[in-house]
Length: 481
Image (cartoon, rainbow, N blue to C red; front, side, top):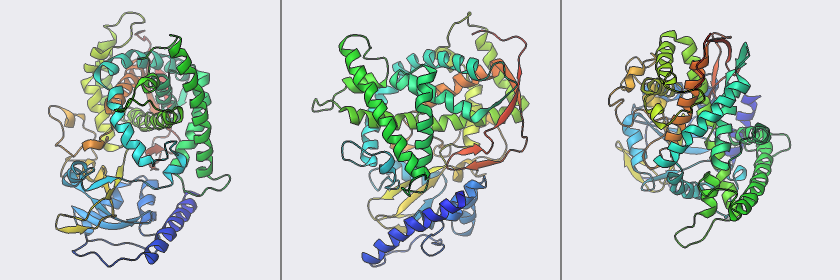
């Protein structure tokens, strides 16, 4: 069924763009285009691009073409668009350094149907506004406050979902944990039943976002649009109530991102409208949990497979746990001591990056590595072109947290959060929620995989096909901190 939908997507998108191309054909741009191929008529190389991910090896599409055409850049045709893939650290640096100079962010226009903007601007424009606003939410003093909240939620999460169970399925639990945190820290929703009310629509929304953009009843795309509308209406109700609570002193101006948005004005002294705030909260909730849940899942996977790595994480976490009194929450200083644990998490992010790469659009004609890139072409960078490249990471398939000791990898080689002006502004937030998860996980359990050779698919994030079921072995003595 996935292959059918993917084929339909490629045909649908390519037909539209082929029609436009025939209507508005321009002469071939001057200069030498990058080496490569555009694949099949109409559908290009989209199926090959997608299918390598479904088979669990998205890097194959990249490395096959790097070997055949160029280790620096190659031409292709993806999602109905002429495209070039820039490879290696130099390619990453070029794209990240030229954001809003030669290139800008790009994603299919279908995204606007799932994330419609109340301000009559595109998702791209709204994303730019959000990126200007986010540093206020993730500045150090705010992050310091988040640690205790994350620890409190993690305790409840492990108590409700993991303890007193012989087996659990990790990926759904990891999604529950990260979504619960996002709900609590962004809009102060903590009650599990209220969180669950949002969880299913958000799952439909997320599935629709990466589905074939065919708005017919019953399709994932149609369900995603309906789910988005539902969540936006629910968020507006929460926003209206928060305005009342702030006016009556029942809510704090600093308690979460929602309060900040309601009270912050732009350079002209204008405040955001309720629907505009709902749009931005919706985007934050999606971005705030999907990628981190994938990272947490693969941390569980690798710690199950590598007992010596587990032992190192366990030793570090127990040293911290022993310093805490009964019921005492983790704090910022505790997380700064989790150096080995974070090196392990980074190696997981290298081998299984939740963000496989991203598209940019050329906003001017330019040359790169001796080849011409016409305005309007799409540019793609791939994390795997460096993460799994022996030029940058010797023995790239080997799990080795020591790669991140000292100054760590060379610039632009380790890019799980992107880079440049568009580096994920929630990078430090993600670090905190991942480390808190690791602390409570290893403090309570050892575990083993129920399916030793469980298949991994990448669609678009890496996911174990069965959700990673594991068998839990609680430690005989668990410290309460």
